[in-house]
Length: 507
Image (tube, rainbow, N blue to C red; front, side):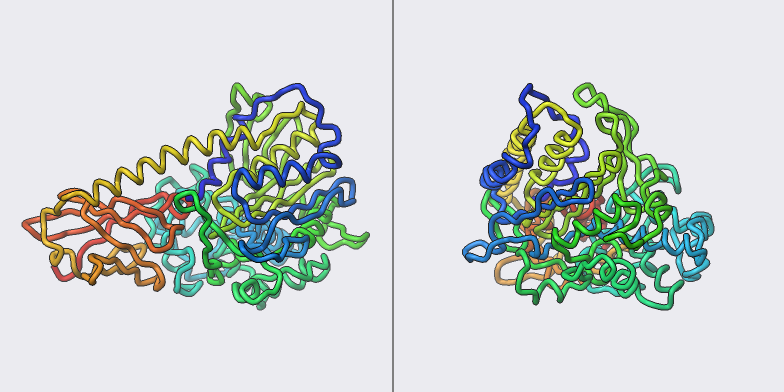
């Protein structure tokens, strides 16, 4: 299970003790990371810390792959996932600075075929709207289809018209990966080149990000790449790299801490790297401005944190009186973070190769506390206590579901009544078949994904996905006059919070 989103709330859970951390980076960073990696069962970590234009620390810890001796170093590739969004947002802000677009231009000016469910929203939605997550989608809404699927980029964008947004247009923040996928196609329409080539020419080459790339095959075939892992029954399990080339503008960059340290230096130095302007400073400011409220309340334990807003690929918040600019990234087997403290001329990147950890967020908070000269506490220990309790609760719930499914439970209909194809307007088609092992569900847009189904009650099935990324979930069924009318499908919240009702065809 992957729970990195909970870190949005965890900054309020840090309690402080009266120990000095004046020399934390110099004296304690290595021992801290090595110790906490063991606690969190993380195979590999890489980090780069920048202050006043210089690298304070840049290092890898642990191994790229369990059971092999190859160490993580500053050049080891990780999938940095949604840290990609800052590059996409910067690309659009750069085009706006060049007067080739306005961020307030309608998306349909460049993609006339673009549609949302609501015709009024379609007519109004701007480039800025799709970049700051205010088009009405709930966080991750429709990503059950979009993530690691076999559809083309254009087909996925066109499918947005089938999604009924949970929220009203521009009313609430809802983290929308498809907004950034759409933004990538806007770059292509404006420049007559791909967003991939745009990144290479405007960012990777001038910043000497020589190890960075945007394609799945690049990390699969690289000789120095971290393997992705998750935890299943408290044991690390190797995953496949997510193939997200078709939604790449939101999440597909492969990179290493050496390369990202150059990106951080440029961000902190008003767009300059090695005394050369890569991006005008006004573009940096534009991306880090606030355009959508994420949260506007503090807490008793973190009273100095009053808000979180979203810009163009960056989240901004206040902490201890300083502006913090950051973004997380989560992909199958990876959770990562990039953080800037512009007023302190400091920043860092943290990369990890298991998605079942909050340590990457704890280390982020530890370093923010360090630069803001806060009293020391072991943030990782605090986070681990909460994480462990949640894990125990979740494990107990799953074990209880398995016991129930293994008991003498029978559906109100025969297995044969479930067999057939089902349709959902957003996802498309799934199919249930009877095989030697029992009922099995197949997914038309995820050819490698399968769900083993067992009766959970008269009106529900327990689905165990062959890919642990998707989890184990009850699937309610609706039976009318002895026939199965529909089945409701759910995947892990990390992928999509929504429930998807599939209607049986040819009933």
